[in-house]
Length: 481
Image 1: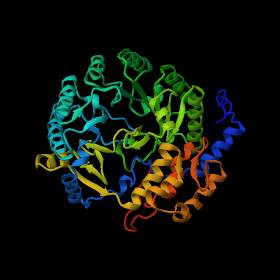
Image 2: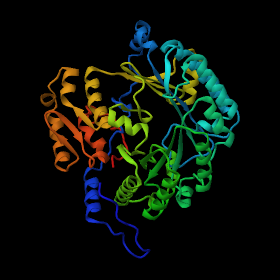
Image 3: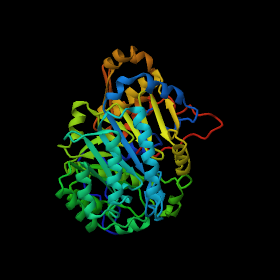
Image 4: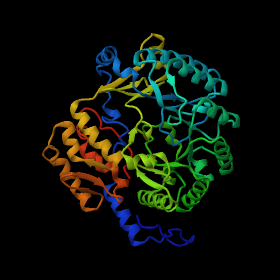
């Protein structure tokens, strides 16, 4: 992309936008719509309570071979001490004593149940603790949970493992950083969102830059392999002035990975967002300008844009994996492809096992009841069909590799791609004319210009997007741009 020229005006002046920037903004406005983030395919709206759980259990019992294969773990720890108004995660805000203890007791039971089903000897090549706020747990509880996992799965002490945890900078003790390293975590993700005090006040997440900088220094001193920042644009009181300063501070701290998400204001779905003043939210054109500013600024600072709001340093393993075709996308975003199966543990966690997606109960009491009854706590899911596998391969190839090898797709699935998807290819023609991708008989390749539009490029291959029942409202997704 072209270098970002200054768009910072004097207080009385309107922002100066170059012809290149204006063209990019017009292109973004042209393709702005709602669409899935494709952390799975089929996506979560296709999960049903009447999914064939009996077939899943039968598959686990009759196919022992996969029980020696590598496995990824995701643990959902839902508690937060304070509410962040923008948050759309499945969380429980409480400072009530004992809630973590009760949750851990039930999580221990699920870990025992699940390990017996999926295989206790599978090497755990990847693990991620998310939430909520995982560091809501104190040091003793974190240690206890890791010990429980080690007692029921084969945790690894290998350099290639990826064991990561999300941290709220406001809740972590200095001693906890050393503990996490000692327990085997080698990747840290910090929820930054924005450094501007007025933006932080508007979303009820006050965390001064100095606090974060001290935490980053502490993390670096313990030699974690990777440090990631999560940012959000489109928050109340954000503008090009505040974003420039936030980016300056972010770049000065040199995180290895940066995920920058578009805030979706859906107060009808997420009650905490009702506390946000909608008049303080940047309008669509301002959000587009912020998105362009973020992309150019981070790339000018040396970060590689790997797609779907993710930027990494050139030496980062994700950048190398993108070049080597080893990048994958799942419920935690982009990661290295180190295991075919993902087991989710805890309330609302999603698993991808074989041909099945399974989601645990989203409500805490329902989760507790299932676990107490000796049942596996999932209550929604789906079985992936042959058509789903084909379309998932196409979508995930485009998102992860930025390329679809048509000949390879034909060989793997025994199809004639060009004859199978004429309508989808016709839908991509306008994007090709705008330079977002190239289409030939051999491949579909996403251009550098097309990386911000990956969701738009994938959506024509999503068979479910326009197939919802007439008596049900269509699912809502975040904005693609």
